[in-house]
Amino acid sequence: MRTQVAIIGGGPSGLLLSQTLNRAGIETVVLERRSRDYVLSRIRAGILEWGTVEMLRQAGVGARMDREGFVHDGTRIASRHQSFRIDFAERAHRNVMVYGQTEVTQDLYAAQDKLGTPIIHCVDGVELHDLDTETPYVTFSADGRDQRLECDYIAGCDGFHGVSRRSIPEERRTEHVRTYPFGWLGVLSETPPVGSELIYANHARGFALASMRNTQLSRYYIQAPADDPLEKWGDQTFWDELRRRLPEDVAEQMVTGPSIEKSIAPLRSFVAEPMRWGRLFLCGDAAHIVPPTGAKGLNLAVSDVHYLSDALITGYQGIEDSLDQYSTRALARVWKAVRFSWWMTNLMHRFPEHTDFDLRMQETEIDYLAHSQAAQTVFAENYVGLPY
Ligand code: APR
Ligand code: PHB
Image 1 (spheres, rainbow, N blue to C red):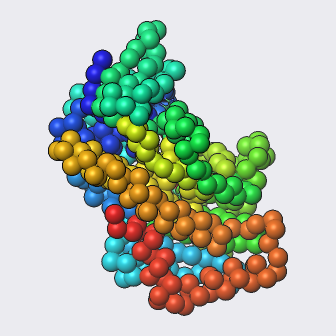
Image 2: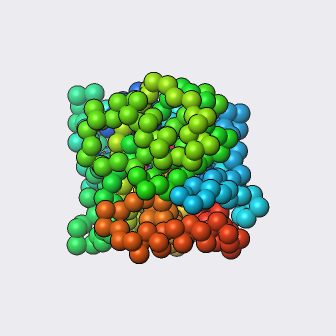
Image 3: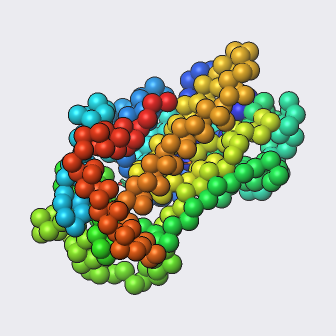
């Protein structure tokens, strides 16, 4: 089997890269470890930067997003002393779109099927070979057969636990990690959202976030020990704790109901450098992880796809320089999103090692954000997404 670009991973990175390359006339094959149903069962974040909205539209997968998504031009920040709104449109002249990652992935699969792109599910034992030559190839097993995929380039879109990053020699890789001493307990419920916009709350008991998917589907999170057993968090226990952490006016009007999804996720910041090794290019979670506070995970994957698709398209036009620039260009934006996500996580969460001074610094930072147009502009331009 042969293709131009072999893509490891059928999540948002791999699918959007494949879709973008196919529409530029470049052939791809996507190798995905899990079944399609499994991939589409994952509940992930739901905030799209405007750059992501435009990338999806350019890739021909924006129609349902434009029909069913919700454009948001602001968010609410709450703390012990105050609650205020940051207006993205006024401060950064851009918006965000509320549209679930699961929906984005579904739209990408549908578009790829329409193009007839080979997507091989339930592959096993993927190995990358001869990455530092002009004839790299991939071996794997699928349908009970050992197979080999010859290609010009390999895109490692296989997430944090994938094989691609580990295929770069350890001595050539630098990994930067910050693990946070807490996780996020998330609940999805078929209830009307508590507000028309998101609410991020800094509370003495811990962080809370009120988000949504649509007018009848709410998404809530509370900071919780990353190793808490889910059994500890029955629905009523969760709702009671969430109410304690949200502003009173919000908690009073919150409609609760049975959770249809509940999970605890650890929080970490992670960046692997470089994002290229020979003919292998890392993209998305394979290269970096951000805490969900700034809603950057999916958007950074799209950012990498923007740079990598551009580099591969111009590379096939004979302009090799763009492939050489990919890692540097992608990482420049990755680190800015990692910074914002780290800053917002430190601003909004309670850390076990916090001293009184640390708490006063947090309160003061939030107070400064509440009253400074300049501070709100900085927040807004990072939240809606810095330019590519
Ligand atoms: N072989 C083939 N596929 C693999 C392998 C492997 N060895 N290892 C992992 N995969 C697949 C996973 O099953 C998954 O479907 O690669 C895909 C990676 O998808 P994601 O983890 O979603 O990563 P990415 O596409 O970069 O999207 C990043 O997804 O997880 C969220 O928070 C993350 O929002 C961010 C977004
Ligand atoms: C979500 O809706 O899942 C969501 C929204 C904003 C975040 C994180 C998650 O910062």
